Amino acid sequence: MAWKNTAILIFFGVLCGIFAVMYLTIPSRSAEVAPITYSAPLKVPDEYTPERKQVIGFLPSWSVAAKAKVYPEYLDQIIYFGIGVNKYGELMKFDEEGNELLEWHYFQTDYMKDVMSKAHDTDTKMLVSIKNFDNEDIDTLISSGHSTNRAITQISKLIDDYELDGINIDFEYFTDSNFPTAKHMNIFLEKLTSELRKKHPNIIISFDVNATVLYTDKAYDMVRIGELVDQVIVMGYDYHRQSSTVSGAIAPLVSSGDKPSVTKSIDSLKGRVPYEKVILAIPLYGYEWQTYTKEQGSYTIAGSGALASYKRVRDLIDSRDDVAISYDKDSMSPRLVYTQSGAIKQIYYEDEKSIQSKLDLVHDADIAGIALWALGYDGTYIEPWLVITENMWGI
Image (cartoon, rainbow, N blue to C red; front, side):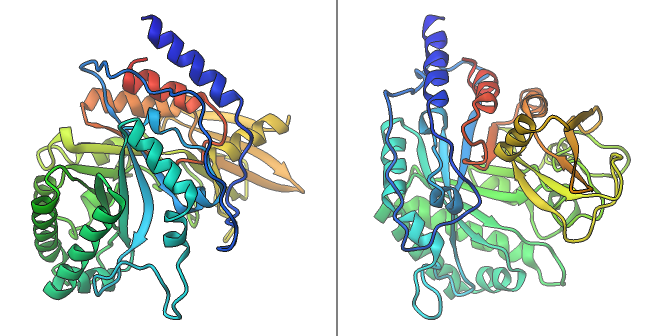
């Protein structure tokens, strides 16, 4: 169709004209974050095909700090990441000395106001992630009726104050005790979803879960969670981590034996969570290690692991002529090797081919769509977006 070709051409033109953005350096709280400027609207016409899938983007505070360019018109949801909630149910806006926390500061910048305004103009839903990564704090929060009520009150006020379309719950819990976490998590979510929907009938409530926790940890009752929330976002990455002693794919599509993989994570939800609620989060980054050898799966040098954004990898490939790239047919992931000052460096990352394989899984399993971790990691490169829009929206 003509409008589809036009949309792609416009998308090419706008993206190619964007200045480069520096990442991973967060300015001080006193730094002024410049507002976003937009060109002509790029919103894809609302002509959906039966295969159309959701495209969600997580926008972390550090990407806001770096003034990353985001494109609400190519997203169904933007989830700001994020605002902490403590064990008492209080949203974490200030530290113990009364200083404004960076995540709260960046959420209120003119930059974020422009993002939210543009999201409204393009009918892109705006959510905020409510997060806690401490086991004891989570257990205290979800098992205390008083703390639960305070959290619900403050989250509801946040929705009202910023006209949000929903919230995302990111409680990254790993069981290390006999505390009945699953029982209390259910009670917490039952009350949270019930109370928020009374006041906000059209609210979207999503829940993040670690991809391996799905089938190795009893902290989550995925059947009940799937009944209560609108979307279950499977964080399909970090199968290998920055601290891993052996190098490997961070988001392997498949794996042998009892090793975890993205496909196994999605398959583990069959019969537990309706697939029309399942979202696969895919990475726009990889990990870089110094390794002992150049071989695949080489042991890593302790403490050498670092995040390598899609932009970082592409810049490296474009600027060096000594990069060796290979592709593992099992994990369906690329790997590059180079040498710097005599040290062997390996990066396992995601490219258009590996992203495509995950989009194929989304269609083959017929789940709801994808989420991107994270907006800003793509820099000014358009290739990931071309693959995503073509396969998720069919343009």
